[in-house]
Length: 147
Image (tube, rainbow, N blue to C red; front, top):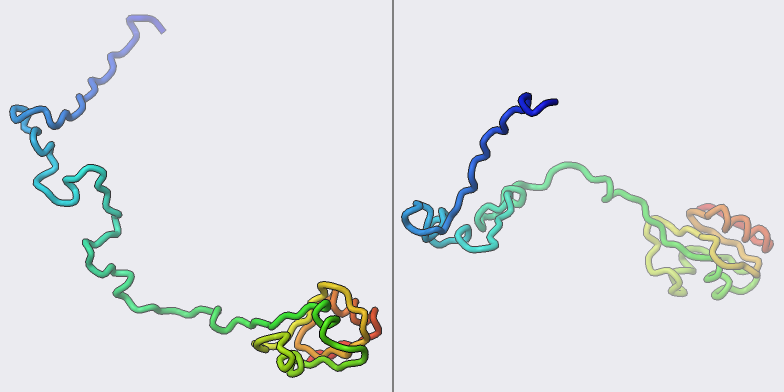
């Protein structure tokens, strides 16, 4: 590349200079108009803002299907809790757990989790068991029954 091969750059348009007196045509209000939210400094309005009117997304009714309404939730209990509240040889059912106040609601059933140690021989009747819970209950000499 040589000096005579260089092309001239396109002329850059000069920046609009506002607030430079009445002679410029852009003085006083600096092209912002009179008063109002957009004339103030720091004004920014979200593109979805509809001037205080109830927005369209709130005017339209909710529609469609959601599976969350039909989700299955279990009341959970750990082996450490069973160890604390029951004697050797007891039968544990969801009704007894609710009577003793260990669980508040049965929901869709009771699930026994394997957290903690079980040192008592218990017969546990529940909707579900974790694999760790089954192993620990059988190791202690107890039984698991799925309702």
